[in-house]
Image (cartoon, rainbow, N blue to C red; front, side, top):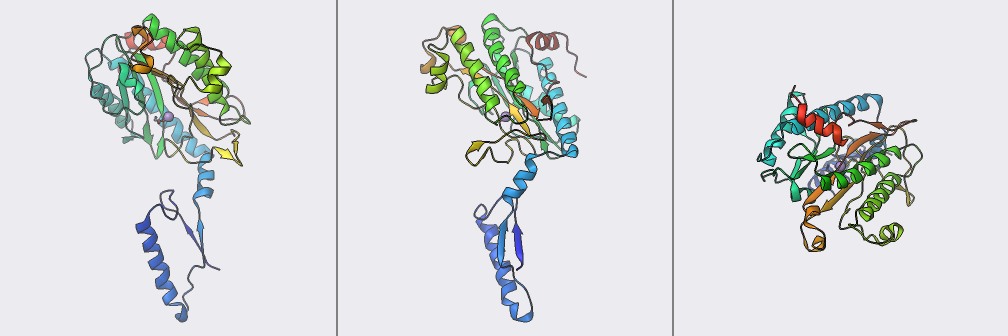
Length: 326
Ligand code: GLY
Ligand code: MN
C-alpha cells in the first residue's frame, strides 16, 4: 500500500482546508488513472507528532545555532541597557535591539519585541512600544532574534535611570531568585512542571515576606490566589519556534526533561495600577518584572544559553553606568 506522508508548516489535515482540497484533487487525479497503471496512495499518515518529537531533541548542529541566537540576543539586551535614557520612546529601544540583531546576521526578531516601561510591563504581550520611558520606572524587554531558523527568547528588566530603587530592588530580587532556582531544577529526569513550581514557590514566599500577599504559602499556592501577581507559567519549549512544538505531558504525566531539550525559565511578578492592587501602597504599583533565560538540559548541570545578558543587580547597574556600545 502506498502511503502519503503529509505535513506542511507543522500543520495537519484540517489546519489548511485550501491545501487539503488541493491534495484531494491530486489524489483523485491519480485515482482516475488507476486503470492505466497509476497507484494512488491508500493511506494518509500525519507526520506532525513524529516531527515534533524530533524537534524536541536538539542535535549538536542545532545547538550551535541556538547558542549563536542566544549570544546575539544577549548582545542586543546589553545594547538596550547601555542605550537607555529617560524620555526615550520604548520603540527607540526596540530599534537598538533590532539593529544589534541585524548587524550580527539575524534578519528578524523571533517574535515581536516587547519593550514595556513602568506599568506597560504588566501587559504580558505588550507590543505597542510607543510610550516614553520615565526616569523612575523599570523597563521590561522581552526580545529574541531568529538566527538561521532558530529562536532565542530572553527577558531582562532594568531601571530606566540605571539604578534600582529599594522597592524595585526588593521585588526584582524575588524574581531573580525564582529564575535562578528554577534554572537549577532544569535537570534530566525532572518533570517539565517542576522548575516552574520551584520558581512559583519562591515568588509566593517573597510576596508574603514583602506583605504584598497575606496567608500561608501552601494555601496561596493551592488556591492560586497568587494569580493576580503571577499570572503565567515559567517555561515553554524553545527551538525553531519561540513557543516550540513538543508534548508537555506524556500519558497525562508531565514529561521528564532529557538532554538536548531546550526550554525557557521566565518567572515574573506584575503589579498593575488597577482595582485588584488598589490596596497596596503606591510605590509598589506600576511595576512588572520578568527575567527569562534559555536553558539546555544536559546530562550534568543545565547550560544557560542566555548567560551573557546581565541579570544580577550590580552587573546590570555596572553595564548601564560604564557600558560602551561595541
Ligand atoms: N517571549 C514571549 C513569550 O514567551 O510568550
Ligand atoms: Mn518565553
